[in-house]
Image (cartoon, rainbow, N blue to C red; front, side, top):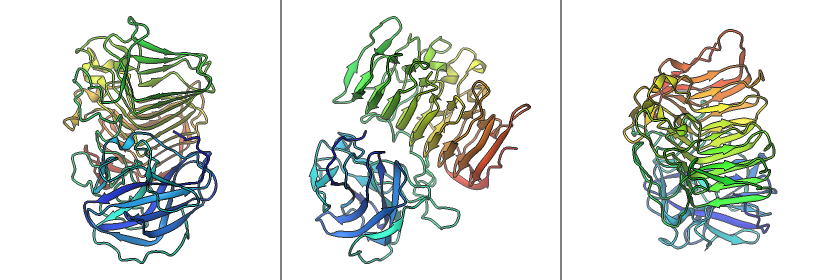
Length: 508
């Protein structure tokens, strides 16, 4: 969420590593209105600056990266602070994120209060951030390389450098794992190698590491997720349909720390922005629809932002009819702008029947309900279904494994009978897909990994394709045409997400 604060401010996060290593650089998540020149810094916990860098060649929004002039050695189990400075405020922020500590690979971000505040800031022209407010995540992160530290000298002032374009770790305020190796530069050894839920060196999330705060590891069959502390329970407006209605939202609607025992219906008069954060959406058995239904045709200007949220319809019995089994978690909005970040989706027919402007990042799809249909061959389930057209659509740093039983790590029975692929880019009304890209993601356990139709200039790079039934990619078939502007470093992987050296051939 973008904070309306317009003051210059230094924003940071405290972190430590559990092993010696080197800090390579810093990154932050930029909102469209967070303009001007930005700098990044690494500090000791006592406020001594160890390195400073200026961000250059920034994009309009999204993750921005900058490497220090040389790596900075850090010691195991010693607290540091990484920060960035914005001259105009309007920074990305999520309150209460550090109510609990967070871990990623060898790095730890302590809970607010355990070592003073976490999520720290300092107003003004810059300086050591040491004040806290509501355990807020300011979406600034460190790029860390574990192993023998590379000795370096602290820099005296800002060093101009080009923001790194390489694939990078999972975007959380939790300091992340090592930077992903590129094809031209040797990188650090992935910390998740051999792990039951490998992240390919931090490229995509570990299982059960994203979603609503306070939600732990769960089974597909669990009747109901527990209500985390501080959440408000929300019940249906209509007990028959199990729907909770949102009408006339022409401004901004913020839904934070909610537990919805209903599916959400966003009505035709909603033309503003709906922000769903730190929440659980869990329609009960008997729900007539998916987790979020948007009345599409009249909502062309609707923006739907969902972050740190778990979408998991409650389970139903084998063979029972229930719409959440075969519907996507987000559905029926071909003209909306949709942004998903750190969203966990399970017990549905897929993540998103997406619109023309869609961004999915650091999110996870698993445990599609294929096995619990009376006839699994009728399952119209999969991963992400774009509507088609000019996009843009970008899927990055995500884990799309609809056919996995995440609790056990094994495949869901009958997953292969789903008639769609894990990632199915399809046309709508004869339109051609353009401006579509998928990168740094794990794609696994669908009938196919990727099934593309009528696409022009599609971009897929640095993805890991796990096991599938028919193959990593599907044929275009007769009467369709697909071209790729980029097909680079897509490799075969194991069911746990570990990459191999075997390349995936570009579809013919």
